[in-house]
Structure formats: structure tokens, C-alpha cells
Length: 125
Image 1 (cartoon, one colour):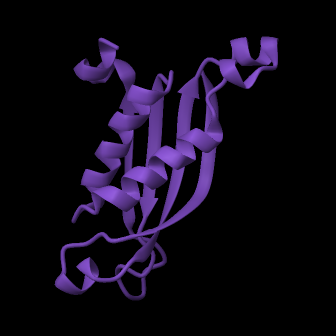
Image 2: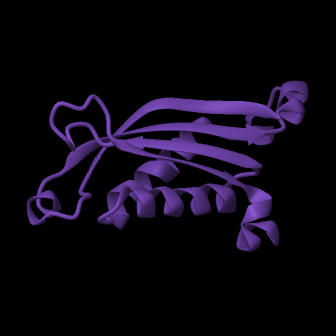
């Protein structure tokens, strides 16, 4: 399986369980690894045969800035579903870091791994 990755995608949004978190945007940092078959794109050298990195980034940004959930887990799951729906990817590793969430800790976040065949709603598409 070939991999496409986006590392360090920084998006400011509202997320959190505390009242003060619901009023201030804060940065989140996303790392994505998408399992795809890149042979068609490599052969044709046309973006139409590839997963568009900018479109993936735009999808993550769109969901992160409009959903505004309380939990990183919820955000991660919504992003995963959207990426499987919109792009021909087979696997996804998604990490979300919430800098400054806990004092004296370098990073706090969530990382999920999903496969297209594990999601019955995606498998029929």
C-alpha cells in the first residue's frame, strides 16, 4: 500500500468541554497518513488520477472549523468518515494534537486508524 501524508496541518477552531474553551479558538495540529494506490497517478502524471493533497487539507479544515465538537475523538471520527466518502483511500491514520491542553505536557491528543472495509457505510460506496 502506498502512503500519502500531511504533517503539521495547523487549524484554529473551537473545541473542548469547558465553557471557556467554547468561546476561544485554539490551534489543533493534524497529521494524516492515507493508504492509496498511486500507480495510476504515477503512470499518467495527472492530478485527476491522484488524491489531491489540497482537497484533503480543505476537507479537514472545513470539518474542524464547522463541527466544533467537545471531544477530539468526535472530530477525528467525522474527519475519517468524510475522507473515506470523498477520496479513494483505503486506510487512514489520523492524529490530532491539542497544544496547551494540559500544562507541563508537550502534547495531548488522539490518534485513530481506520480501514475502508471496516466501515460498512464506506464499503458500499
